Length: 569
Picture 1: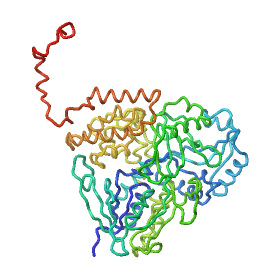
Picture 2: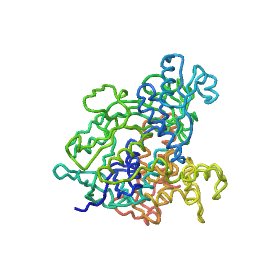
Picture 3: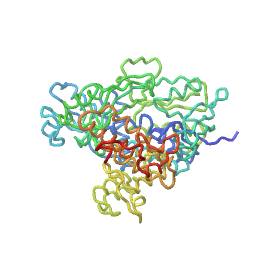
Picture 4: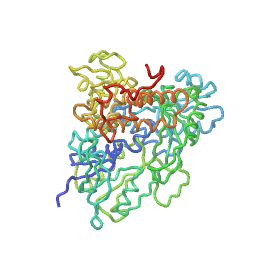
C-alpha cells in the first residue's frame, strides 16, 4: 500500500529536526510533526551550553568524548548559532584538590583541551569572579542558541523536500498487528503554517518507517502502541539575569551538585540548574525557592549576581534514559549517553524506532546514528553529510565580519542582526522599505520580523524563537504589540489579537518567579502599558456584544450631570 511519506519523525526538538535534515539530505521523503512550536520541549528550555565535555570528564567519559567531538563539528557547521565563549571550571577554597586533579586528568583523557589558570589569571579572564577563587581549568565550552540552530535544521530539511508540521499533536499511533505504519495528528489550525482563529483538523499520516524523537515524552508515545520506554524525566530550573555578568561559561569544579553553572547567552546570563526526577514531563511543581537557590549559590562564584536583576525563570525536563534493570536512584548518576531502541528487536513491533537520552550538544550524532539505522531498514544506500555541510546561515560565515554600516542600520543593530541571520543577512535585510527596530531590547528589525512571519504564519512565539524579539529586559512589554502589527495585512484583526494574547501570556509565565525589585517594577509597567494604556484587560474588541462607539461622542446628557465642582469640570 502506498504511504504518505517514507519516514515520519515525531518531535520538533534538536534531535527530531536533526534527523529530518539528515534523512532529507540523503534523498528520503520525510515528514516531521511537532505538537507545539519547534523547540517546544527540552530544546527550548536549556541553558544554552555547548558542552566541551568537561562536565562529564570524571563521571561519564563516553559522553564527554562525544561532546568534544560534536562541539568541534558544530563550531564549523553552525557558526552563526555558536559563540566561542570558552569555559572555566572554578575551584573555591572549600572545593576538593583531588577532584580538581581528577577533572584535569579526565579532560585530557577524553581529548578535551584543558589548561590550569591561577586565581588571578582566572580573574583577568572574568573580573567578577570571587576574590577567593583558588584556580580554574580552562576548556572550550561555548554558548549556543538552541532556537536558531533547531530552526536552521528544519529549514534545511524543508530545502531538501521535507514537510515540517508544527502544532500537530500525535493523538494515536497507527498499528496493524505487530506493525506501526503512521500516526494520527490533531492540527491546531489545519495543516501548513499556523493561523490563529482557524478551526483545527485531524489527519492520518502513513509512513514506511516512524522515528520517535520526542525526548522526555517518548514513553507517552510508546504507550500508544503498548510499548514501554523507560524514560526518566528530570527537571531543572534556569534563571535569566538582565545582562551578561560574565562572558565565559563559569562551572563550579566539584562533584555533582545544584546551581553550578553560569552561561553567557546573547544579551543575558543564564544560571543553572537542578536535577530532580519527575513523573510527568508536562506537570511538575515550579517553586520560587529553586530560583533563590540559583542566585544565592552561584553568587559564591560571581558575587555581583546577588545584586543583579532577574528577568525570568524557566524549567526544563531532561530526557534521561537507562536500560531496564539498571536501577540508578539519583538522576544525577544516570548516563547522559543516548540509546537507539529498535522496537522490532526489542519488542517484536516493526516499523518504529525510538532515540532516547543524550543531550543537545550531541543531537547531530544522535540523528546520524538513527538515520543510518532507518536507511538500513529501508534498504537505502546513502551516507550522512551533516558533519560537513553548513546549516543555512553558516555557509559563508565570513560575511558576518564584513561592514558594520550595511543596510542603513546603526552599528550595534547591524552587528546583532548579522549574528542572528549569519550568511542570510543580506537576503533578509536588503529592502527598499523602511526597516525600523521593532524590539529595542534585542535590536530586532522589521525585516527580520517579516522574514520570520513568512516562515511561521501568525504564530508570534515562532517569530520569537527565530528572532529573539520580546526576549530582552522588558520581556515583550514594549514590543509585543509591534510584532503583532506586522501580521497585518496578511492576517486579519482577530488573528492578530489572538496571536498577541498568546505571545504576551507566554512571556508572563516566566516572569512569575522573578517579581521582586526592579523586575517587579518592570512587570507593573508592562501591565500599565497593556492593561490601561492599550485597554487590554477590558478591550472592547473582545466583548461579546457590539460596542456603541457613537455614544462616546455625544457627551453627557443632562441626567448624567453631577452637582459640585467635580461635575462642573
